[in-house]
Length: 351
Image (tube, rainbow, N blue to C red; front, side, top):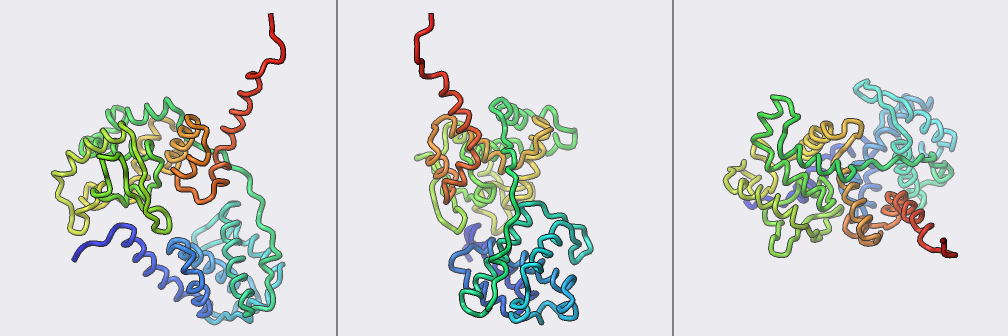
C-alpha cells in the first residue's frame, strides 16, 4: 500500500489523539469540536481539547458545587451558572497549578492568554446557538502581554554556525562520533532552514520528490494543508545536492522511503531531533541565546526584510496569513530604518 504524505499521516495521528482527548471531556463538548472542524486544523483542535481539560479540572478541584462530580458529568447548565469571578479565579489558578501526574505547571502570560482565548471561543459557540443564556467569558479581560525581545542570529553567527556544522571542531568526542555520520545531512538541513525560513514541521515533512532543482523550488505544506512552492538560492541548492548524493545510498525503514531527511535509525527525522541538533550547534556558537528552529526562521525573515524592505514579501514567503503578525516581529527593524532617514535630507548646505 502506498504510504501517505507526511502531513496526512500527522493529521490522522492528531485526529486519533483528539478523539481520545474528547472522551475525557463532558459529552456536550463533541458538538463544539464538530462545529469548529471546518475552520481549524487538527493541531488547533488538540490545543482546544487540552485547554478545556485544564478548565474542567479546575472546576472539579476549586468549585464547591462541582467538586462532587466527574468531569463527564458536568453539563451546560453548570456552565450557565458560572460568573465572571469564577473565570477570574481560573486565570489566577492557571499561574500555578499541578497536573494529573502531580507535576508543577507554571503558565506565563501567553499560556494564560491562550487558555482564556480557548474558553472564550468555547462559550461563544454555545451562546451563539442559544444553548447558554449567559456568557461570562465575554466579560473577562485577556491578560496584558509584554512584548518579548525577538531573538535571532546575527550575520556573523550564521556563518559561525554553518562552519561549526561543517567542521565540528568544538563538539565533544561523543558528539564527533555522530557528527562524522550526520554532518552532510545537518549542514543541508540547517542551510535549508536558514536559507528559506520554512517551519521545522514543513522541513521534516519534505519528501525527496518535493525538491525541484530545475526551478530551485520546494513543495511544502503550510498550516492547514495548503500546498505552496518556496524557492531557494545557490547555497541551499549546493547543500541539498551534497546530501542527496549521500541520501541515494541510504536504505530507509519501510514507510520512510520517500522522506528527504532521515535519522540514524533510517526513519524520517522528527521535529524533536531537529530541535536538538539546532540546540547542539547553536550552544557552541552563541551560548547566551536560546536558539531554536523558529529562531532560525526569524533570522531568515530579518535578513530578507533588511535586504528588500518589503514587509508584504516577507509575510508571503514566511506564510503568515496576517501581515500584522510580520509587522509586529520586525517593528524594531522598521524603527531602525526610520532613524536612518533622519540625516538623509539636508535643509542647508554645511561648509
